[in-house]
Image (cartoon, rainbow, N blue to C red; front, side):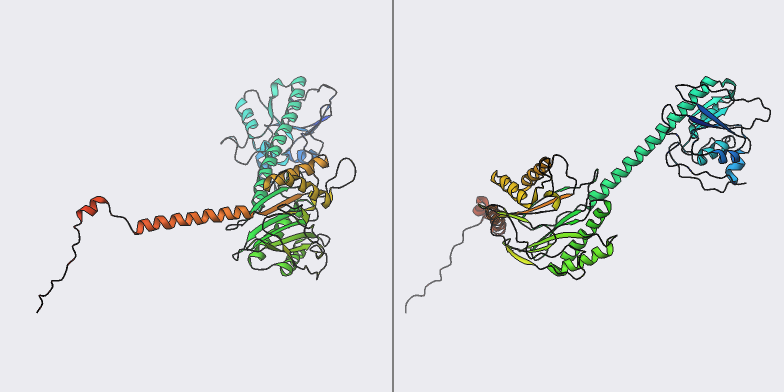
Length: 482
């Protein structure tokens, strides 16, 4: 008959605390009655309760959640038949669990019962019991998955008690090591996946400076619910976006990536302003798990000359702009629309903004402004952020240095790590550097033209000139006068 596979408990049986009682399941069939289990002493306040099964079928019924260790007699008959006729599916392999066919050829029948026990009890410690003259079989039992082996003739109470505790602890260590390895591999795979989903700005051919900082709120993560992106279209326009999905878990991070990729595709396809945000809202409505999920968004499209920009706000904080010789301030935010996913037929007007010649434009999520100030409930807020950034600008900080200083000060004011996701994007234009770059490009073009002229019209060397005979002009003979 098929051997039933008992349900394994969520906590592995080998995870037994020190000093707790242990339960031993003995699987052996001794028709002669010569084998007897010695009385186990109570060591360090720990008692060992014993259950006995005469075959694998009975062992399957007795293998409950409270069993900590199994003592299996390798001479148990019927093991091979039980392992091949059973129809119950084998549970997933864990640390120390064997694979069919791993036994030494020619000894598979002797280890069939052990292989079966290891399959139906992958998280229990197992001791193999055999005769003293069969040390090779005992060693093979350990190789395929048993924690230890005992000789039947040398079995005593002290040795058995110590072997049980050793097997339980070793199994617990094996399971912990296996789980740690799986956790590390899973973390590495998640890191590779999340790192691949972070945006790569497409700004080839643009003179604008770019810097960004990103800090997810959830522990040991690379992605959160915040997202940003920057692309340059063939007409020279630079498009930038930053957004925030409500919440900061893995589901919100996945939705943020979907919205970012959709925004990039729609932008490269030529959409902008209200048309783009309306389409993004449709994407959000189809991809979100609940109607309560929404996302805020801020988009900016900067003209090819870098002096003007179009601004759209969907429930998102307005960007901050700083110009040479002026204090930092927020861009106008009165004409913004609602967050994506709140109103089915919402509209998002596009507002024209004058940037000027030299400027820095900082786009951010609310994680940067909702940090606490000191021990109270007061938040930094937009006004506090503007004052903080203005102070750093006065110190001469620009680009990545400015972002690093701003994020570090927000964390310091909060008294530690921020609980919400933080994304900050900085675009800048320096007219003086633009002139220098244009002058350098013109010099490079002039040098190339000069080298091309030299290669096209070579000057003959002195030797070549000397070898060429001079050209004597031919004067026509004059006719004598009549």
